[in-house]
Length: 308
Length: 268
Figure (cartoon, rainbow over the protein chains, first blue to last red):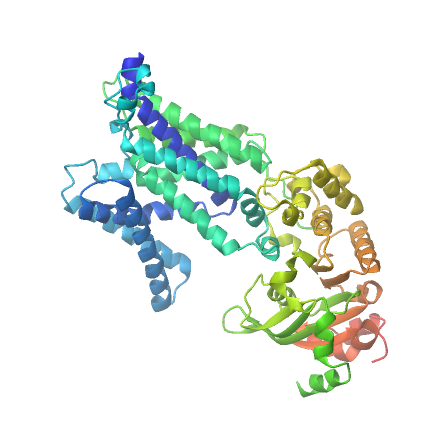
């Protein structure tokens, strides 16, 4: 494949896939260590109706309406969970289960019932993403990377995902020590004066932003694989958090690149004429990486000394 | 209640003690749900002494400490540190949580845990310099753990983990050390090492408060004792307060008289 084909057709989706995977994997490291990994799943369920409603109101799939819709849906989810918990007098876990699935179902229902033919927003897109369609038609080849006119035509999703990755990285870098200390020992962190509840909330909010931004790339369901698989695989490679973060970035990148290539070219090599969903393949590769590290990773043994 | 009030009147007025007390708790009530775990507890810790908090399981010992430090939110009550608000005095406190309260599979090394004790110095982004590293190593040395600095924390025994926690507290260079069951599930050598470090701190004029389970060592290890069973039962020097009568009140029928006899108590 030459530059004239690769740059407009494959480079933007590849970059978006890589950025999305890293932006989710970074907060995912802490979510996994806090045993809150399924928060990512919950977020992706809850935000769907918000994104759909934002689309129905504005008629476009652009950044701010989507973010506001997602935030609104999250607030409704919190109120709903609290209401179900109090009125039903049941435990929070059960209330969450009811609220998340109900809101996701409402999102799918809304999508099916509304006319979204003008844009790439349908159930399939919502679930599996739309990576292949994020192309850069203004590009003619590698030289377009230095051409301001062509650059102006970059898919907005790429700009959005890059900005999200920068914001997520900045959050993790600036709050590295509080995140690390409060994830390991919350009580101790509080005696240092850290607002651990606020920090936990900020972490979830950052994860939510990454999830909403990655919505285009990998869809609202497969994003969960990006939160869990690279960090979990990375944990099995090392016993140091700093190294774990690095490994998770490597695995996220590998998943995105290999997944995208395998989706595009894998079926052809096997003699089929069609490609398969890139997002699905990215999730599959990340799952394979996790499986491999689970079998061969150097740090997969639980070392914790038994209680004396 | 009336008995306790009468007992309190025998000592100096509370207002005078609060001013210089490293930790003064007033009217602390904490509840996890319907039933209070700690009910209207007052405590005045004596400067430069080692105080044991004793009481049966579920009596609110750990909760009292956590509420005093703002780790759990009390229903009512407050704590003063050296006569001032907790917020302004956090830098003078080092807290050692229960060893079992954290996940020791966390991907970090011994030295990294000790460096967490330097957070006040390092802040968000300041780089860890050789002098920080040296300080952390010196703290590990005080608990006899320098050989383990590079180990992953999950590879340590329970006693070694407890020593690492103590080293982290030492790195904080505090005036008031609050420990939650520092001797729970540790080997005899570690218990000796920890008590010698704590006594060393007291001899430097620091104040040590520990939730303690083993009634047989209260006499040997501590100067003062605070007895609690949801409500405060007694507070004072070990000789005054650690009496058969108070133990009976604290533990109810849970301690048989035979056990109390073995404790070598001051005449009560």
